[in-house]
Amino acid sequence: MENIEKKLREEAKRLLEEKRVDALVGFEAGTLPLTATPCFITSPEEADRLVWNAFCSQNLAKYVHDLISQHHNSQKRVKPEDRKKKVVGVVARGCTTRSIVLHLQERQYGRDEVTIIGVPCEGYVDRKALTAALDGADIREGSLTGDRLDILTAEGKKEIPLQDVLADNCRTCRFNNPIIHDVMIGEPAPAMPGAVQEYAEVEEFEKLSTEERWRYFTKEMSKCIRCYACRQACPSCYCPTCFVEQTQPQWVGLGEDATDTQVFQLMRLFHMVGRCVDCGSCVSVCPMGVDLRKFLKKLDKDVFDFFGNRAGVSLDDPPPLSTFKEDDKEDFIYNP
Image (tube, rainbow, N blue to C red; front, side, top):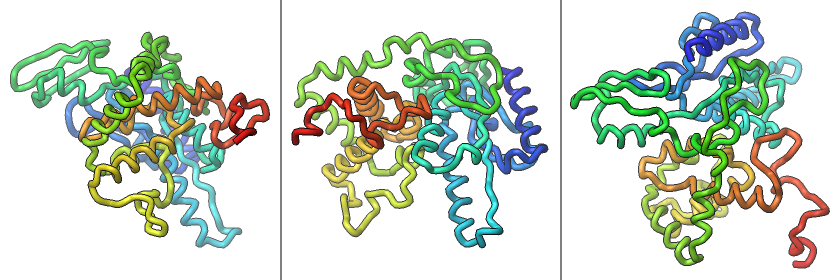
């Protein structure tokens, strides 16, 4: 990882010095032990802030979209002849590049507006799993040595295998290396061993009756407090005005009524059909531990089974709900 960090900083510095990017989104060390946080750098001197390790969890494609969209909006007030293009660089692993592919397919920005520094990924630490492994103890000091976390808490020292606290989406990830990139840092990471059982949990869920599945959905959504953290973290949620905040028409109430919460979650889930890259951002930020991933992964499996599509895996394979094929096997399209 140290070698990757060194090369990453060198490449970021070069891109900024040569003015090939106006800003670069990456990770820097967090203020708490064993954490990393997104950072935005605009000068070569800031490149030394960049880190790359198992604590870099967020999908940075969210910030790429926001930065470029804000620039597009600001340029609307500028004379056409004076308008400038803004290029955003990003440190991107597999799921981040899949989100960028979706943004490009949905024409949110042009390929020439983003420069992708690809990095290999062997999974990131699930903070909730780490907290559970430590029985809630505060971390005073910590380090990652190979595939082991060495941690000091008030109760003493503890060693935790990295594999024990990896995020669930990382364990079954098929695309842990960048799909597209302008510069690749380091060698490709080995395939995640759990990828062969990517849909195992969903297949077990599918064996339940309709009533049992609905009971599970209502139980999970009863935890939701409508904080919208899942929406805010998701790189595929970029509508200028979310449907839950529209008043004409008003699709759903803003209170904590159980049916309103279910409608919000159902509609958001279906907005993710063919668009979820299983980055885990929504799950990691949920303060109530709602099992959003099971439902998203079910939709992901259905899209693959019905249309042979995996979200963001190829620029030439658009999301299934944004295209049409005459040989579609669903007869109801022709015989409503």
